[in-house]
Length: 152
Image (tube, rainbow, N blue to C red; front, side, top):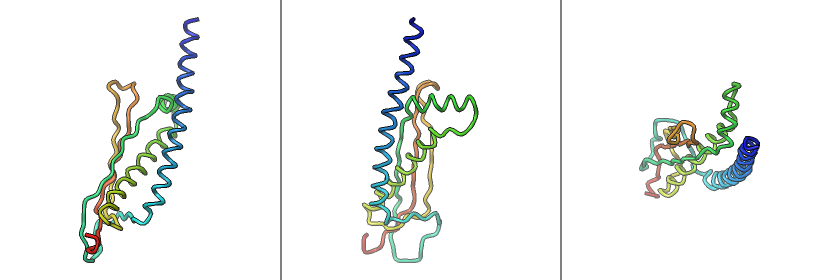
């Protein structure tokens, strides 16, 4: 009987994690889409060389750390056991990347920039104290903001 109760508790926690994780993810995506619309005037360019114009440059960056919920971890562990792509983590990394870009664009917008050159990304995984605990994914986006002399 105790084993059945433990199994039901685990299943209930997974369902709760799935429901609340899905709600949080949908809200975050809605926020990302709105801010992407607001900051679409700032262009990201992977080129290393700046245009030959009179301008000022500044280092801009945006970073984010997003936690992994237990439902995603359970799903990933199951897929990892069977083999295949882990879609639960793909959405987590995509959200983190888009959020880091938005924060970098916001930093550039505050400075009056319209372009960000030499855009780069750095990612890392931050695990809990033990390997079995939920961790986080960190994404940092950085580049060189081009600020027209009139805005500087």
